[in-house]
Length: 74
Image (tube, rainbow, N blue to C red):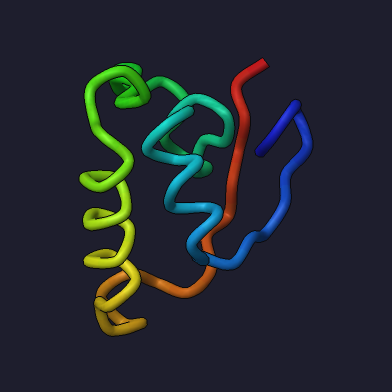
């Protein structure tokens, strides 16, 4: 859910990057009460960020699930 609206998204480069830089922007349904993840915006260089995103994108679809049901916290 994002902004209180449940939606299905594709696990693409944009979603992965956003999830690392702004982890509270969209929350996977069922994880609304999990401890907040740290924002890595100030920690990772752009090269490090690119490396992480590329690594995650190279994983097999079964390992990274192509679609996620998102739920945003109000």
